[in-house]
Amino acid sequence: MQKSTNSLTSRKQKILEIERQRKCLIRFLLSDCEVIEGSFIDVKVRCGRSGCHCENEPLHPVTRLSWWDNGKLKNKIIRVADRVWVKKLSDNYKKHRQAMRDLVRLNEKEKEIIKSVVKLKTRKYE
Ligand SMILES: [Zn+2]
Image (cartoon, rainbow, N blue to C red; front, side):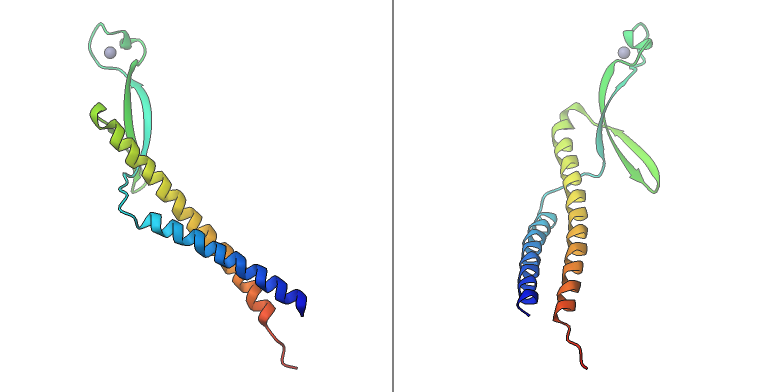
C-alpha cells in the first residue's frame, strides 16, 4: 500500500510540473508577440544588368521569406529595410510552432501519467 502511495505522490508531482510548463507555454502562445509565417532564406541572384559579374554566376545576396500556402511554396523578397523586423517575427513564428509542438508533447505525457494514476487508484470489487 505504501509503495503505491509513493508512486501516486511522485506522479502527482510530475503532473504539477507539467502544469507549470503548460502554463508557461500558453502564456507565451497567447501573448501579444506578433509572428510572420515563413522561414528566412538568404540566396544569391542575378540582377539582370548586362556586363555585371553576376551574368556568369548569381552574386547578389537577397533575403527571401518562404512559406507554404495550400501545398505551394511561396516566396517573397524582403526589403533590406525590413530585414530586421521580419527576421524577428519569423523567428517568433518558429518559437510559436515549437511551443505548440511542446504543448502536444506535454498533453500526451500528462495523459499517460493520469492514466497510470487512475490505474493505481483503481480498486477491485471482489
Ligand atoms: Zn549583377
